[in-house]
Length: 177
Image (cartoon, rainbow, N blue to C red; front, side):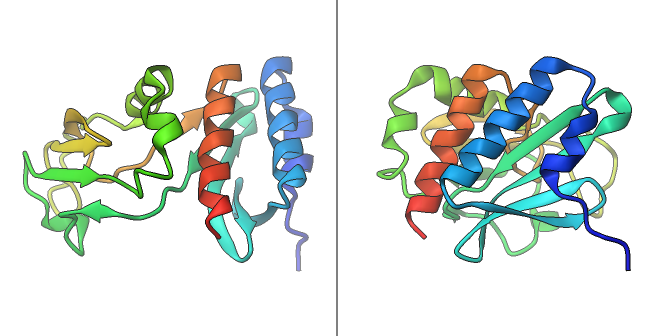
């Protein structure tokens, strides 16, 4: 059986020094917070604390060292049907994951704008069985129109401010475990 690669080993081939340094900083943050990374499938790891995934991490070495962090939030999606396919265009989804925990972010306009900018806009991909034209999302009080109904907040090649935001999100989530 082939050995499952470690995230720390996967980033060694990054061509962009800034991406490599950011990924190293992120690894140090995870380790110092007793969060381990587990390989899940090709170029994807989940960061786990006490058996619960706090984020997913992906890499793409073919593009010179692209890496993506997708933080988890306390799941409290109000009005979210059991299946994303059941959503119709214009559906309003309220995302208010334990807002009292996330007050530090909600009160920080720069971080809020950063997170909201990560929520993918609908590209009307045409997959009518799984997707539909965009929905409205109310993310901690900010209404966003025409968003993909597969809601996540991917941070691609996070720069310094984004990395700090990710750390805060993960810390908040992990501290509740």
